[in-house]
Length: 387
Image (cartoon, rainbow, N blue to C red):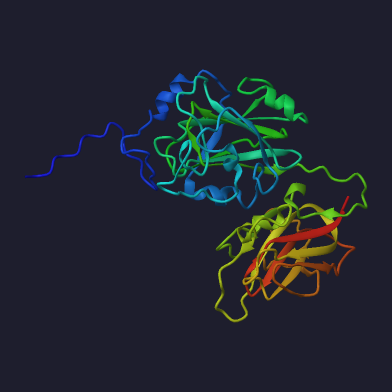
């Protein structure tokens, strides 16, 4: 007897990594949800960025302002019954553990709320990891959420020094202003939007709204830190730090992890939150990363940290700097790079201080060179601003 034909599907089955709670757990199309949204926002012009282009669009010129690694913090939320809101700002990629269940239900690496939300949306309030920042783009990743994903989202922001006041607004209008208007989402995919006009206003907090409920794995807010520099012109501070406006603009290899980790605060949690390259097999090979300083400055000393890199640290690192006045970022072979320190013989899981060889010239960029390859956790360029 021929096998029975499969029943027709009412809605198309999502493609990509699937983790159904049951074979028949589908949610209403996002278009239906969008029509019923009562909480209206300004229609900010934004261009959708394809999933495969999100990193190249933002990572070389922006930082993730809400990243937990940078100091971003979830202050409050409407609900987190199935999965905690703090997962949203985890800098690591989301993972799946199919078949794992906890007290509340299936385990998910993201933020997931109860079904049947009586309000117009679920929300989470996040304080930026920098003093304040301007925004260029947004990423919402619904990886592994299928049938329980967020149908639509929006992002609002405010500038405030009072966390309690911001939280008191909860799901109300309060003092929030639209950063990204209501946008459709779907199952298990990275969604990116680039603002046609990056914000000129600075924000300290953002609220991610999810219509009406569901799950999101990760949330990224791409933009630029607006640092608060010391008033003392002779003050020494880390010119390369992301919190002070530093950005990792390029590298030749980031096989295991990104050079943007080099300028994060602290010494990190494990080997995954540094910069690590692939093993090289070519004689004379080097790996490099270029960092644009938060402000031009006179570098007095450096610190290279190999924390957690114990069997894969570089044999040696070198440090160079350049004063760059071109429109684009300097390339690794641009004319003008200056040797800034004696070569450093590296040790595992250790901090390596180095005195600057050029303290009276202002520089805009620093280049870290690993010989021949390996991993470095942090690089610091301590100096005075060139005012």
